[in-house]
Image (tube, rainbow, N blue to C red):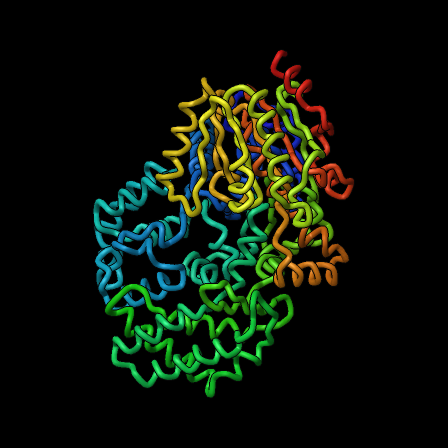
Length: 613
């Protein structure tokens, strides 16, 4: 079986793509789930769409392609356009991002997901959103909406940006138009939340009139899914939010309710008295602070509806939502009270992402999770709740081995007990040597901004300009920094970033603009109460607490940052992991098996030889 038996869009099929398509095609025929580690450059988007689309069309299933990045949507839609053109087949695609990101109302970008959900509901129910009103008249689709649907079907597949622009031009809701297209779509390209957030999924599927048993689910960049699901399960309430809710309620003359929330704030401050950092708390400790817990939640929910009629955001609504979540189950969760120095924060943190994904996977026609850093595949199978008969596949890098020099330098360490001014200077000296010997641009990623700044003070980059990633960079600022960095490629520049920051994932710098990446230190999670609870939970469930809750996630982050360097067959570069712990067997065993890492303290000759070739 080869690419000619699938909807493969291109003339040339790489051997690894042919193998992937055979495996995926066979798994779909047998309703098997898959977890696939497929490094960048394999062409996994085309390789998975080829068999998945053909199977979906022939078996009257719906293909859901889920990804966490908007940029990946464009790659998927372009590939589907190529398939449609090459095979002259008719199928419908709906491309959807988050409802808030598609909304045409002004100022909604400042709203959190919960606030936006409630604000949108109020606007629709009170007939205050013209874009929603313009969709239907007397229970039927308006002529403008019907005409737009016809036009979008004719030009289908459409990028979501094109759909949003078309809708804005005629004053229609982009989300609702995308939903209409989704009802008869063979392919839906969307964010994870459309299937894995239970509130959004229930609304979404009720409008689609489709069941999960008809869903072939492709989860792209699936290494991001566990973290996203844990965030969906979690919530937090700080003293600042409570204070804001008190002021808000007084502003709307809800003084009696404001007094009740003020009592909650006072109780939380009392609960946090003497807490210097953090402590685990029981559900009852917070519940007992409130005289009539359920009534307060109901009153705040009602108040939030009134408040959102006058303004978009409601602090009272945020408090009500937290009260509902806090009263949730204990198993698979941890409750923590933190003193940040500026405020007290009460958190209800989800530990088990499988709580949201396990049932979806079980009920789906088939689910395929794939990523370039999905190692070890067995861990992702476990934590996401895939069944035991799931197929686990790992593919090697398709790029020539001679184009990459991968090194582990067991010279320094960022472990907490090793941190000192002298160690920072030693790390900086190694960075200086790497900067001197790797021509052109170099990106150096650190475990945190604090460590980056402590070490960067001692780095002497010579003639090379240094660029610093900043906390909370917006899209425009991020792009501007990247463009300025690329312009320095001939003389060479240094990008100093953070593994969990804006540039550790999701950027592509062609080989002409980046000759090397250095990952300084091991980006292990802070061993706080939540991390310890996560380790304990995975230990009890899988007997792999340290691995699943601590080590493997850190290695995934490090590999993601390292992956910024080699993105195509033409790219050449040096990838360096700088920390003695990377050479330990328990850490080295987490790395992909196809790389051939050089472990050395004498690294300069290797670099000189690499660039001489």
